[in-house]
Length: 332
Figure: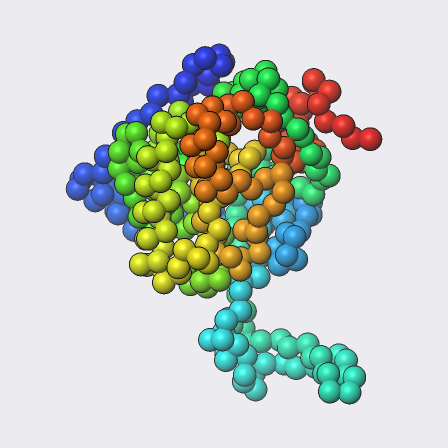
């Protein structure tokens, strides 16, 4: 897709229509994946520890893969533990060592049998500078963005980065992750796809995390929403909540439904996360509830076009570089 250089230009949307032949091709592609980028972990050499997840269960690393050019980012994440996995630990093959004892409290180091405590490993290659920065621990700063700042700084930045969404279009057009689709509605104006996020294993319901991605390509964030989009938002909300209840038996009363601003990528999407999923917890300066967005634009057609919005941004992010050119971020 061509990079747009003018604020007044918009990305034309493409109607997603999956006929039988298209589904067959997508299914065939899913069954015959490309060769894995890495076959054994000995091929990966760490060159830099980028950081850790806030929950302490994920480590972000940068490195090189033998035989491949360019850097890679590899994430190591301990899997959630449920009762079925705990039962696998209750065997003589589990090593156990007492590390602390105080009255009735006894703490042991338990080393479970091989194969019962696997680590989810995500390999990103080649890793772009933007992705490397995303997983690198750096200070973050709050920004108060007026409507004028958005038009002058943020929107031009967005239009310069619309060629980074290939993976989104692969999902929308049936070329990838079709086994993770929960539901979809195909319509050039109001269509969307609800898919399980890659961070969720689709089995531990308390970690449920899905993304609803709209099919239109001219909506980048909540800034673009007005009353003409209310039918799409309401249908998306009801359809997705119903689909999650039907497929995963999780009622709407246990789900957080929200946007991010600034979003991680500028193609309108909505998060659906279990209320007990800590990584999906609301964050001041980032999360905006779908219900609040619907209410606000119902009351005022151009609410988000004119609103002053607060968000936080990591130092070194490409947008923060643009903000620095206008002396927006106060660091002292």
